[in-house]
Length: 191
Image 1 (cartoon, rainbow, N blue to C red):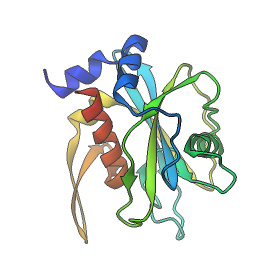
Image 2 (cartoon, rainbow, N blue to C red; image 1 turned 30 degrees about the horizontal axis):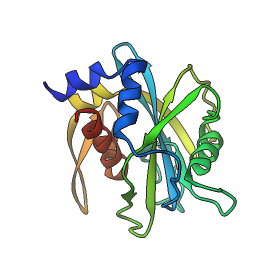
Image 3 (spheres, rainbow, N blue to C red; image 1 turned 180 degrees about the horizontal axis):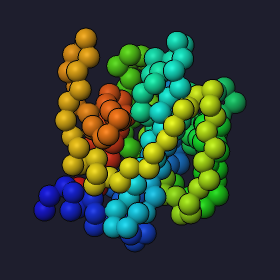
């Protein structure tokens, strides 16, 4: 069975629960320096993932790139779940404590530009149509993209420092850390 068809079959609430069985539990997720939200919204026969475009800022190593909502852990965050809730609310106004189900976490990823940074990806099912209001200091856009569309648009992107695997959709290039996190989710789904 090809990956696109397998991704399509997992888009029901029942299958979201099957996905949660393949993920690490949310409780005790305390290892890491940052957290991102893989927000899944059932769309027709698949899930769509929320991607955001980072605002152009000199202080941001991911400036202008497509990313997932999230960010660095603050000293007052009791765990990384609290980090992802706070960061997602600050960036998008989506309250993950309202009509959302935490399915689990994927493996910890490391940033290439900051190898000491460990990022915990939380997989979260959105059970409503969220109203998104972007924090324009941090983000300049967003788009829900069906997982099956991502699988159809794999390619590579070139920079002066090398060529990298990426999803290439219209004016969007999703590569690097975000690409690796989504690819890992697709591997988990297709197990």
